[in-house]
Image (cartoon, rainbow, N blue to C red; front, side):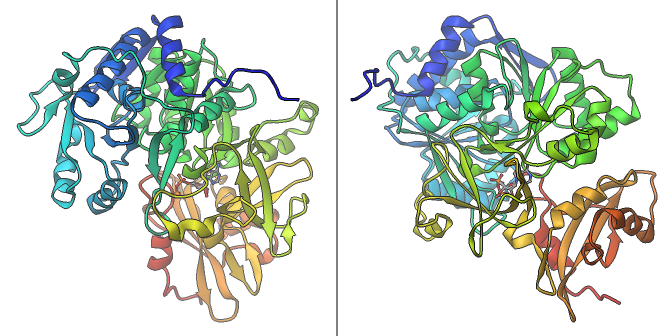
Length: 538
Ligand code: ADP
């Protein structure tokens, strides 16, 4: 017997209509380049997103045309998030931290016909422009209020005369809504194409109590850039729930963020660990300066949230939620939370669990795959994390050679190495290429890094494999000390000793001023490995 329910397509057009009908008075607040705050409501947002859609169609946008965005987190970017897809276009967010040649490659590979750029980012676009031929029209958002230079369209003047698009050009839930390229820490950037259906289901899962627990009553500030995996889908999720959004513009330094958290009474926020380490240091320096909402949730992902950081924020009454995901998974894959019967566990054990990457969210299936097939749930055996589900990519855009990232039975190979414990909690112990292979045994660089970052004098630590005459590879730790703090190599090794097998302890710990990072703020280990490839063990 067949179910007898309507075939109602899952599209973000519904989110837009819902927000404008039910929550037209809810605010969207954006920090502008001059640091002032721009405020308007979902009502105004929806009207302008519809106008942007009409304007794009008038400019000649055809179904499936890619529209690139080179923008910070603010109201106009949110308009593009909805205006482009409802016009039948594909929102292609561009990572403004990439090198101009990488941006040119991505814009050409995606075949962007139109581009929307912040006026403050025009200098970047001008470096990219000579390298690309496919962009026909560039629309500039005059965030500073200064006149838009000749040769570009002014965003405000382009949308002002346009009518509000009434009929959305969304043919069905499988239609492409947007695309995003991986940041290329592993070879050439690869394009991932999101469908309406994937984003809608992802939004529902993201809002669940055991994920972000996002409600209409929240105030959300996504620190994670809207140019990186759609800010983890949060602009879509928050529009779905009708939640007030606070968008930080170009100001992502700890003080600017803490000021916004306090001023707008933010209850939920999200970003990569680097951001939170900075915020923590600011709070530790001036513990009474900011009055934050008690229990503010901070979703941390993109790289591992060190246990020490989770503990430290708890002291300030702020709750870190550790999540894992990637560009190919829209991105939410797992979230760490305690099961009901774990609340009485000893504190240390609870922190251990919260520092893991957690349990797969509903509709995502996960398994660890080792040399002998699926790894046991023993918390020890390492294997590659493989996932499948309705918001996991099934291929890369126009990249046949990328097909080896999927198994024959249809799982996506994440490249992350994990253990899974008896309760099903996944812990990332490394990326396949970052493991240290010492005398035939694997050492997890990530676990060593997290332990080192638990030392009070350590600001940042990266552990890399360096060739070794006897053991093939041995771990080398590269450490940045906190301002004004001191620690010796011996002290740090002694700090690690009780936590690891003897042969895991890095043979040497070297101190540096800073660790090279990727455009998404992650440690750039390939660069570190290059830097230390001739390191002399003594
Ligand atoms: P890139 O592959 O360029 O780094 P992504 O932003 O898609 O781009 O990164 C996804 C990767 O980030 C994951 O495969 C994983 O290695 C890492 N990652 C994401 N979240 C976490 C986390 N909570 N803990 C550890 N690693 C994480």
